[in-house]
Image 1 (cartoon, each protein chain N blue to C red):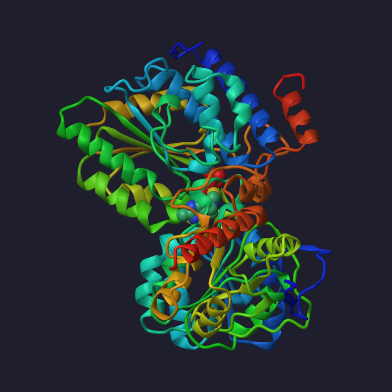
Image 2 (spheres, rainbow over the protein chains, first blue to last red; image 1 turned 30 degrees about the vertical axis):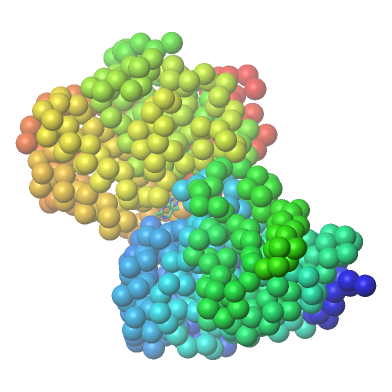
Length: 333
Length: 278
Ligand SMILES: Cc1ncc(C[n+]2csc(CCOP(=O)(O)OP(=O)(O)O)c2C)c(N)n1
């Protein structure tokens, strides 16, 4: 039979949808009393990123910097040089795009303890359109030495990530999104930097996903199971340092790999997994994500459909991949 | 249809229609920037219905004046002005912020509908305007370039790099307008990161500066653009004091209407106040 084993920290069913950026704001408030050195900076988007919740509780440790992303990042570097723990937030496109070189020189290179938590990443930004939809931020942050890159998949993981990184020394980038995310994890889910938890183990195909696409991948695995295809689903929430061991193990087990992300397939998770497999375990793969193009205006969640980022697209990629593998086998490759 | 005019009563009527159209479009889209669209209306109407040399039936005319909306989020006002001037049918405004529509949430370079540059990330537009102004001078063309900036944009370092370039390069074919509505996303600017003294700063950077106490007053706008055109050897900036949400009492000077669209009830109130039955 082809049943796959589902990990016990994954909920059987989704019953709630939560704004993960709101979880971010609330978690900051919770950490505020425990960490007197925590300071929060934002670049004129405090209501959208939800850092305003921290600002209300701790106004003297909250810096609304105005429309000045570069200034904000280098100021955060200054706070870290002094010994504070700065969290700097704005939309992903401005955090990683506008301020990239400030992050490179003043934060990543000197290994400063700055936490960059961006929101509104990916096409799920929605109506604001292409100018506001960061599809390159993972690539931009991943390429920087010393930078840890994390993309939570739901509200439970977001809370754990924020509570973990405040203790984790060094430059860190966390990518959040705008819409409500389905909650997929039980409270017992444990997050560890650099570990990619296997959410479901199956032997025919390995699906590596992050962010909202983890939910879509779990849905895809259910559809595939009905067809007799058992899929592994791995939550690669830490894109860097990437969990080489788990990725190679799953690739060896399945011999077919699909990646899924609300990001460009170039330089993001698809790129990262391809790099790992190319070096350690060459495996046929398909990348689901934004295929070297910009986004558009529209309802954020419906844009996932518009750009082919739904469970059914993952299923289709798996079909194509398995057919490719069996064709190769039939000619003796 | 489009006809250039200095007749204030005509401009006022255009502005009223532009407000009605942009509010309907925002309401239909259920998202977008209401406050900063309404504050720019008179500036844009003056430009497109009086000041700019342009032809809505020939949007690619080489010798047209150029307008760059550096505060890209205010684009509902620009789309509405372009539609009222005849660049595209007014019905198209109802496709605002929809997939595949040319009327995207932030402006995307598309000459056929009169959009001269892609903007939305604040702090790019003045540099792009400098580039056009420099190129036009290089070719000996008598083209003028206009850029509309928000006051929040003056918090971006890149804006001041551009301000320095325009003055150093003596771009007297360039006119910047600052929509000085005193609000940004996070609230009143003087409570977030005050940018005063604004006029003195532009002056110190080498610009000719004109401050308009009322940026909604057509005769002051017409006069300022006239003086801008006649100023030689320097770029010209009009600092237009405006009201965020202008024209609808419930939106005026209300920070929270920066980034949200009118609800059904709010649209009804707005249309009533603008003398239009909902
Ligand atoms: C580089 C950049 N950072 C942040 C934003 C998000 N944003 C959109 S409008 C705005 C500020 C609004 O205030 P202002 O610029 O004064 O515009 P107005 O009041 O005229 O609407 C911000 C921060 C952006 N569009 N670009």
